[in-house]
Image (cartoon, rainbow, N blue to C red; front, side):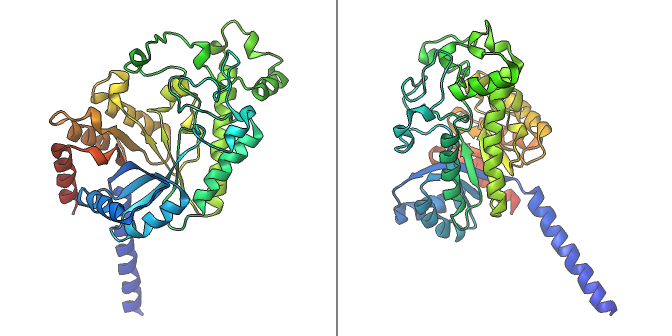
Length: 353
């Protein structure tokens, strides 16, 4: 009897140690594209490359059928595969394109299919239109059916940027020192109608609609309810949902109408691309810490490798993310790392073994 008790206690301690190790593990991941075309020899090389750098999770943009072919190859290297999904921004969506009434509308009354803010691939559906919402949810459901997928990874789950990062504005020859109507979205007729029911006000008739906290929150809630509906469905199927999000919740609210601290995510991947905002690497630590303090789920700091090529920058960004509470980092993208960046990841991999 005593031997049996001791054996049980030993097993409990062993399992506890394993769980503690897993909880404390700092994961390295990367976003990467696959599309609809699968070539096994290419993916065998890519996965071996990721494994050599200690990358244990990959966020793959590809069709469900392609993901089903990648997962067995990744499993051989103990690499988890997430299904990276363009959620509300749906460029080239042949079903949505047939339904222009599904698209988001800006303050000038232009829908996102006809007027594409900034770039041609900005083709945003409205989270207020029920059929558009169902279409988005059905896209997520298709990923949920992929056996062995680590999570449905939501991206572009917001409105178009009402304010671009400071370093991006000159590229489009614009100055956004206020919220300009052509970039201010969420004015779908359904949204206007529902808002008027509650507040007896029309946002289009407000002198400064950007100053209305009710109108901003109303639009935030539409995205939040969509995300949480997807999460509820996924969790009912024992699937996880993660998301690529803007740097920290307050900044996300202002720039893209995204309140990701209200989402019931399994983890978030804030894109901390400091160069977009003309910030230094220390800002990555600040944004990481703010995100960690605002939510209860794990944060994986998104790092833009192209802006971290100077000697020491990449390593500093990783360390400052870890120090400020991140559970890992995700690289955009590991496919183009220079030799020094690769050596940083190899050193990190060796130190954790």
